[in-house]
Image (cartoon, rainbow over all chains, first blue to last red; front, side, top):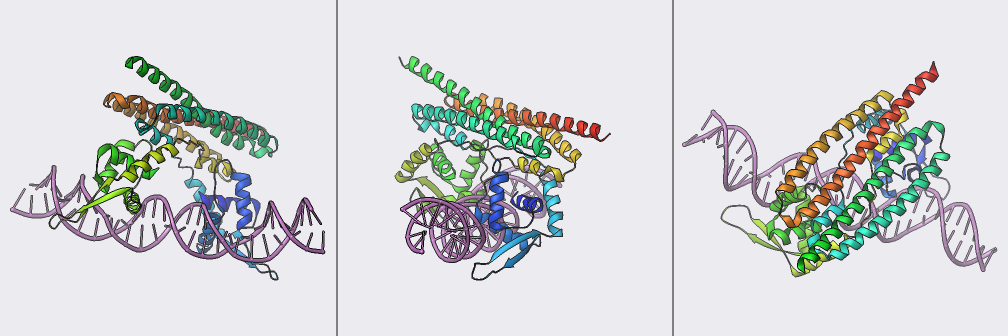
Length: 186
Length: 186
DNA sequence: ATAATTATAGTCAGTACTGACTAATTAGAA
DNA sequence: TTCTAATTAGTCAGTACTGACTATAATTAT
């Protein structure tokens, strides 16, 4: 997705250099991607070599040279192509915590309960922050983008809520198992 | 998580070589990880260098040499350590489709609706298969592991259902927007 | 009996990513 | 004003991962 994001941002906000693109990613795409600065430069170089973007290097006085990138015609076609490809959605979640559970027989039951409990607290906090962030953003966004912004936020909120439900349900199940075991050993 | 998985599987199922570990990952952990074979060998070499596992290379006749790995004492400690680390859960979902939506003004509205619709169909199918798979697995699993297996399955099912709800809700929202736009342009 | 296919057991070169670093510029505090 | 901290702009070496490949063994089909 990274080349898609870079092309899209360059098309929407005009020519930028690497650092500015990283800033735009943070401002605009923070809710669904985390890309590190060297990764941006890595792709910019690749994309320039592929002819998708054009580099203007301007050396002003003693300053280190800056490179401003802009999308070429080939790049604009590529953006459309990548965007269409991205319509092939394939939802396949991977949760590290499932691995923890798989091997949880090597773990103290109480450690597992504690960490699940902490997970729940964190999720509740995150959800609160997310909902505030969502409302604030929606208040300051141009009308045209409100529908899609709303859809993206809803996406995250629903999954956070699903995670919370799961954690609460699992905690209860594990507590019951615990009680049951203790009763049996009596 | 990969070293944790490898150590855990070697401890649970005894010494194995790389290919067998890959098989075990497919059989046992398929629901929450996809690791490619060269990645397994990559980590085995690293872990041997770190003294976490011991290699027994046996060359039998003209056959290519096989390497059987077993967990060392250091490795057993490391497994416990990694398992405890894995209790620090940090849920932070990333959905590529959000990027598609962010740039969806460059897309035909009908293409977006079609692909959301396809997404819904795929999710319904996946959920059906998942629930059958879940029931079958639970029927053939030792009693001790049933609770955790159930928790892991429930985790996936809840998130698939959340994704489905989101897709359905979003499709309806987008359809309404479409109708609204058409009415306005009249 | 033997050819074709699948399973077993790996290797290697190349891609993708990022932590840690450098270095100039600007803003703010003392 | 001059020192400090933060921001801007980028590089580089190292880690993690995997597609494509090799090669033997076992199984199945003909």
